[in-house]
Length: 124
Image 1 (spheres, one colour):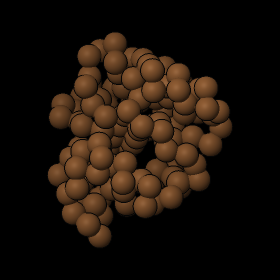
Image 2: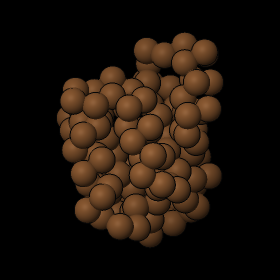
Image 3: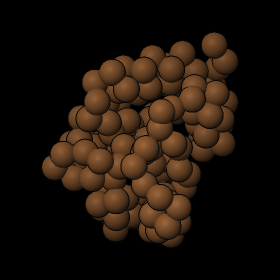
Image 4: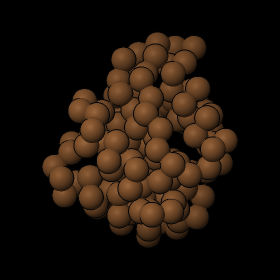
């Protein structure tokens, strides 16, 4: 079981991600914004993956990636967004994101990225 942190300001998407990841056998931590996610990461050692929305209040996905990498965290980071272009995706990957997942989310793609990032735990 991997510890996965979800930073997503939309409550419906947060719930969908939480249920899907828990069904895969992972322990899920939820944050409504980037600043909360950074605090959660600092308070919960052993988190191996961060799934983060790009557009959030208090701290967006780009700032969150930078803060996570500046603090030396080696976890897998998956950025989720419907509002970034190809150049922005390349920039996010250059700055420390591991993968990009387009929205609207497709659960099969989500499962694939999670398995690539932390390995399979359980299959629903």
